[in-house]
Length: 335
Image (cartoon, rainbow, N blue to C red):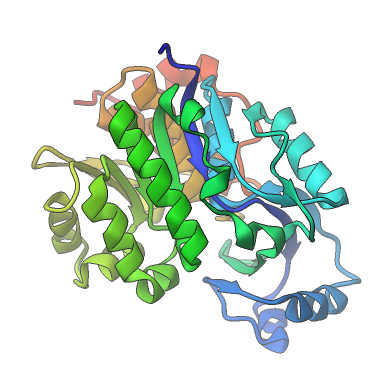
């Protein structure tokens, strides 16, 4: 079957509500800075009431959705498997995804409230996430499309899904279909706190076969159990055929076939780090599906991440498909 999609992403469907706040505000609200925290509807209501006088930006989000949008921004084709509530936010989510050039199933609705992520951005450009999963908490294997995976080049599994048994089963089903059909399998570790709490579930997927692993340096150290980045990268190289580890403004490290490569960062003034790693992964996947090497693809990823960091919001706002040659030329020779 000919490829219809470059990337089939699977993850949570969350409407991002983004607020710019001070560190003192986070402390007053009792919010742990710099990590993702799952909250219930009561806590969500409490936070939104406390923020009622603040302005918020809204966009279709969720980690893997941001990655799918980045693939689209680079001229690739992406599909997002998710679950939203049958409410106004659910309609907003689907329509916003479509405007961003990402396909999704028209029957992804279910009774209930669409999930939301309250995103706090502080003056140091750090992002803090408080997530109410809502309808997305029921995201399970029935939302996984065998036909679509078989007609895709990569699947991209969101680590946040592993917070539930249903999410793990959805990832395992997608992984099994991909393995049988020759579709490459990629996985993101998503957040160090998720890695710490659900390490055994990540191990299930890694042992089942992951072709490309995405993580940042904190997640790499959390998963491998070593504190030094170099040792963590070496440990990842023993677990998966290829990995990309983001290192903030320093760029990224890739490892593939026993070889390690440093990919320099792109210098920008950081205002909001929300979605930087997601867009990095999208740039990498877009590059690989265009036939570029992993290191060249990682150069596209670091550029995408830098663009996201330099503006408010969790995703790429501009199309980059016609800029790939220039980006790679500016990045220098890649192997």
